[in-house]
Image (cartoon, rainbow, N blue to C red):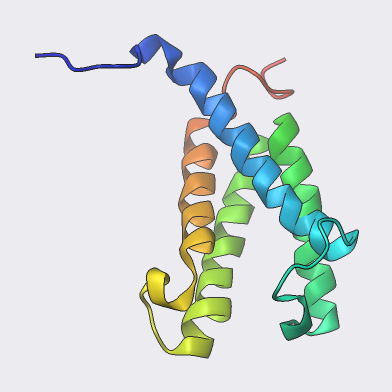
Length: 131
């Protein structure tokens, strides 16, 4: 039996939708750190200034490149590793707890695997890389 609600032919366009949605969400972290928008990110006072600027720059540039789909595979691969490091250094080590629901690392862990998937699958049809 086949229980497909969404036809498999939609997969390429939904890959682009996933990439754009993840990129925009990731970009928001970068704009919050580097441009102060949106204001009020709760963790800004916990990061040392050099780390704040480094992570903000990576999120800003990486987010833009992911959204437009330029250099998608290598950028997504780097961001996947960046988020794996963020999960362990920013959530596991300070709390001593590996469970994401307890150490508040769900977003970092999801970004890690979404970007890893995008690195393997490519940008999808709606991207500069495909143009």
